[in-house]
Length: 556
Image 1 (cartoon, rainbow, N blue to C red):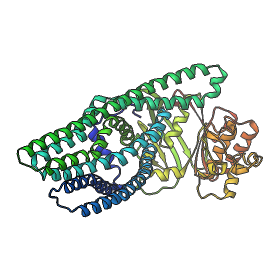
Image 2: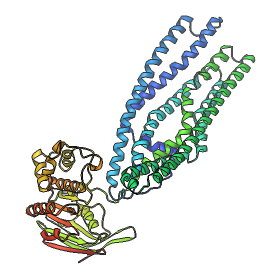
Image 3: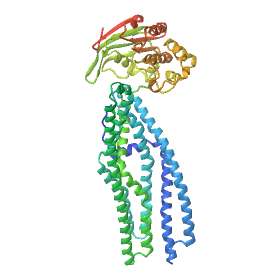
Image 4: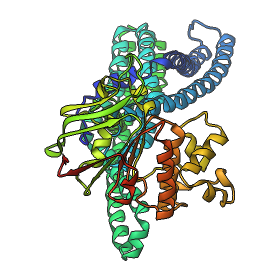
């Protein structure tokens, strides 16, 4: 998978991110409407206060004092209610967005797995799924809404202020555009790629911490704890420096924004005063526009504050979009007729990882209801051949077929139902043994689970555990030995009950007694199963009908 971040403009990122959340458009429009009306209420509370001053000074006003008082109270109540409703709506959107974005990212990762995820820094992926998506949630809930509110608010306030004099309306427009658009764009430009660097370093730190935790035993064993700690502190210090620099930038931008706001307030006061002196407007044309401008910068200041964080947000958006836009090596297949398993074959298969050729002109015939063994040295391509049968990759030359049909032409779901794949390293989730086994068949009964475990020679061991099948296995199954995890992987395969069983070193971590039990189970299953058995143990090959040898990517 690409590790570099594709360069996209801020507008491209924004447009793509907005397009991802179409299901929540209605809720977002509702939040925008409530925020817009709420800000108008807040601004006009102050404006009506200005009218009240004019009324008290016996100037002609559109409203009597009593009506002004009632309006101020009513607007204050409405503002409070709308503010609460807007925040509640935004929080609802935020939680829905987290679920929606993570669903999209996980779907993309599933399409990319395993071909484009092998070798990818898992800590970096965790950073994308957690912190980057959480940052985008803030963008959706607290950037799009304020921007839309600011746009609508600008139109209304410019028309209102401009009703006193067109020049005052232009000053208000210039003020809003400067604070709400120009300042954020300039500050974002000045920030450069600080956001991208920060997100990248944050992902690297997450990967380093995850790697350190996984290798904690080895670190302690060889006395490398101090070295790893120093490296972690160094990376943390670099990240802290970048964060401090971004905070200083944010503080500077805030100061500039406040100075610009004050400057435009003074300009409005000065220009309106000149117009009053010339007799173009009355005293109300000085007081009300100045108060209106002074009290209406809230939505624009919210946008200005985003300028220093936009680069960070766009960096997070780029990282998420990189995953969503990545083209899978193997595209999923659907809409084809379902087929039943009647045997498998590889014919003159050539496959390479990049420039490294792993298999060269390999052919193997796997008849139905047979046990085919494959032996060879480590790195000779045995495991790769099994992955080609699973269609984790597509072959460069030759063909891999099931029931006479290329695996590339079989519905992906159909292919997965016909195959069970057991690797050397069985992954166990942080859950109970029963739930880990039920992954292979969600509807499995307790009886079916126990039968599968008996075939895998792990049932008796499970019964010795305090909670039996409900015993938690710990993170990554670290409460179990390698052999126990391997037998649970075999139990999964038996429970899946697929007709084509692909086993990659299934007994490498087992003693001879447990190996014998499992081989006996495989021998008994051969009437309903077709088995490909990869192993370096000659004892394992005793049950094979045919044994192929792979050396340097060639079959013999």
